[in-house]
Length: 113
Image (cartoon, rainbow, N blue to C red; front, side, top):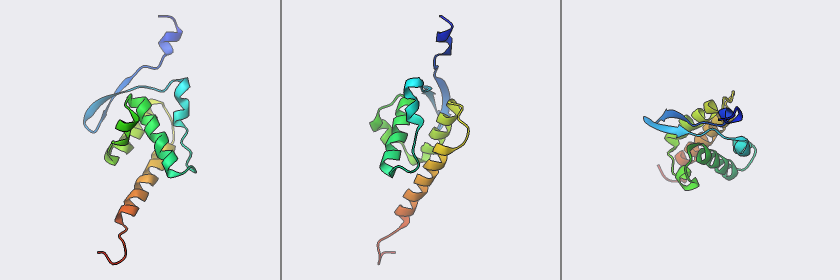
């Protein structure tokens, strides 16, 4: 193994939802997956989060779409820690999206209890 190969991204095991997962760090080619624009439409932000999860967890976009909101915060926190990213940009964005989804769910049409 040459010296550069020692610096290649190596997967790390993390516990999420009581299960062990192997998280794969992003490479230079994947760094765009971390760029989630807070001002972009919700659909675009959601797509970027699914792409990020898909790359790090090595799952399909369809599988990423089916993940329960219950585990999303824990997943994003682990992704940020894996990449040694300080600050909570993605986590705060996700919290905001979860709260918006909950608010919409609690709103009932007029005339219903």
